[in-house]
Image (cartoon, rainbow, N blue to C red; front, side, top):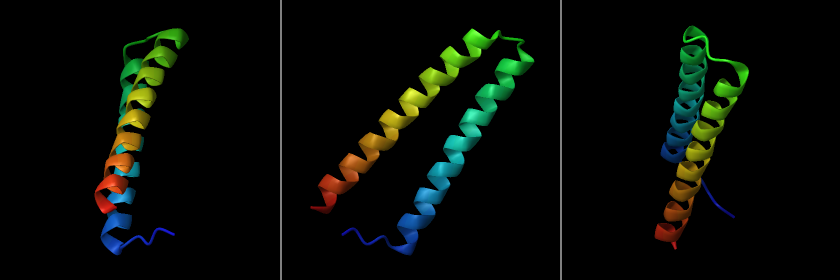
Length: 67
Protein backbone atom coordinates (compact mmCIF):
# COMPACT_ATOMS: atom_id res chain seq x y z
CA UNK A 1 0.00 0.00 0.00
CA UNK A 2 1.26 3.45 -0.89
CA UNK A 3 1.43 6.03 1.88
CA UNK A 4 1.30 9.62 0.62
CA UNK A 5 2.91 12.39 2.59
CA UNK A 6 1.37 15.84 2.95
CA UNK A 7 3.85 17.23 0.44
CA UNK A 8 2.90 14.62 -2.15
CA UNK A 9 -0.77 15.41 -1.68
CA UNK A 10 -0.11 19.13 -2.21
CA UNK A 11 1.92 18.39 -5.34
CA UNK A 12 -0.85 16.14 -6.65
CA UNK A 13 -3.42 18.87 -5.97
CA UNK A 14 -1.26 21.44 -7.76
CA UNK A 15 -0.88 19.06 -10.71
CA UNK A 16 -4.64 18.61 -10.99
CA UNK A 17 -5.12 22.38 -10.78
CA UNK A 18 -2.57 22.98 -13.54
CA UNK A 19 -4.23 20.40 -15.81
CA UNK A 20 -7.65 21.98 -15.26
CA UNK A 21 -6.24 25.45 -15.97
CA UNK A 22 -4.59 24.15 -19.14
CA UNK A 23 -7.83 22.58 -20.40
CA UNK A 24 -9.85 25.70 -19.57
CA UNK A 25 -7.35 28.01 -21.31
CA UNK A 26 -7.30 25.84 -24.45
CA UNK A 27 -11.09 25.77 -24.55
CA UNK A 28 -11.31 29.54 -23.96
CA UNK A 29 -8.81 30.33 -26.73
CA UNK A 30 -10.60 28.04 -29.17
CA UNK A 31 -13.92 29.75 -28.43
CA UNK A 32 -12.39 33.21 -28.89
CA UNK A 33 -10.77 32.07 -32.16
CA UNK A 34 -14.20 30.86 -33.31
CA UNK A 35 -12.89 27.37 -34.03
CA UNK A 36 -15.46 24.85 -35.15
CA UNK A 37 -16.43 21.89 -32.98
CA UNK A 38 -14.08 19.45 -34.72
CA UNK A 39 -11.11 21.78 -34.36
CA UNK A 40 -11.75 22.22 -30.65
CA UNK A 41 -12.13 18.50 -30.06
CA UNK A 42 -8.96 17.64 -32.00
CA UNK A 43 -6.92 20.23 -30.09
CA UNK A 44 -8.37 19.21 -26.72
CA UNK A 45 -7.73 15.56 -27.59
CA UNK A 46 -4.07 16.30 -28.28
CA UNK A 47 -3.69 18.31 -25.06
CA UNK A 48 -5.44 15.62 -22.99
CA UNK A 49 -3.37 12.85 -24.57
CA UNK A 50 -0.08 14.62 -23.93
CA UNK A 51 -1.15 15.48 -20.38
CA UNK A 52 -2.06 11.87 -19.61
CA UNK A 53 1.27 10.72 -21.04
CA UNK A 54 3.15 13.24 -18.88
CA UNK A 55 1.27 12.33 -15.71
CA UNK A 56 1.76 8.62 -16.42
CA UNK A 57 5.48 9.09 -17.03
CA UNK A 58 5.83 11.14 -13.83
CA UNK A 59 3.98 8.49 -11.84
CA UNK A 60 6.06 5.67 -13.30
CA UNK A 61 9.36 7.46 -12.67
CA UNK A 62 8.30 8.34 -9.11
CA UNK A 63 7.37 4.72 -8.42
CA UNK A 64 10.66 3.40 -9.85
CA UNK A 65 12.72 5.90 -7.86
CA UNK A 66 10.87 4.92 -4.68
CA UNK A 67 11.73 1.22 -5.06
